[in-house]
Image 1 (cartoon, rainbow, N blue to C red):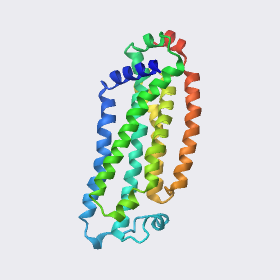
Image 2 (cartoon, one colour):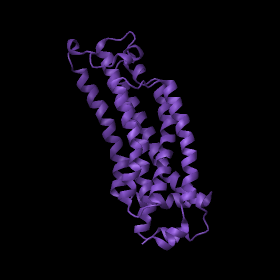
Image 3 (cartoon, rainbow, N blue to C red):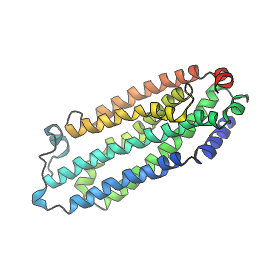
Image 4 (cartoon, one colour):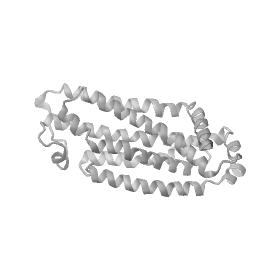
Length: 262
């Protein structure tokens, strides 16, 4: 456990000197938080007679808009899309950290001394996963708390309860860490096989595509974000995490990295 802690602290000391990592952890949450607040301010200033639900898919109306006015329903619809966008954070942030943590260390000549220590491959990859997942999860949690507090003062209780129901807390508390681990495992697998951190980050970045597809699906009414859907996503992601973590350990060849990477 002490070895893992030492590696985690070393990882943070190194990767957070990278400006791209700092942008992902610090500025990306700020951008995703600013968008819904700006949208709420704009929609609150839209005349009531101009508010309409014509652009909202019919499949979502019955789920979201029971007993609401058209203005409230339109606002809840938009807020749900921005809440889904917050799920980008636990995927994007750890990909940047994890991709840099192996290939970046190789290019800076700091990986070989670490691999020469008695630390096992499982301990090493666990430490790198924790170092990538923890900042992402913390940033996501803090962003969602700020988002929740901000909305409480900007919208009425009906909108607030509809836009931030229990399913979204489940998404942030359960699904987000699982997605974060998934992206880290994939990034570790990719970055242990390539020699360019930019290539590793770009290849690992494909994990953001499912989030984009969910956002598009929700906006078009093809996908309905509800409890059963999120529970299914959590189960599938947990299984995928276990499989990817196993392969990450198996594919991480210490000897090849020490002797063949140039």
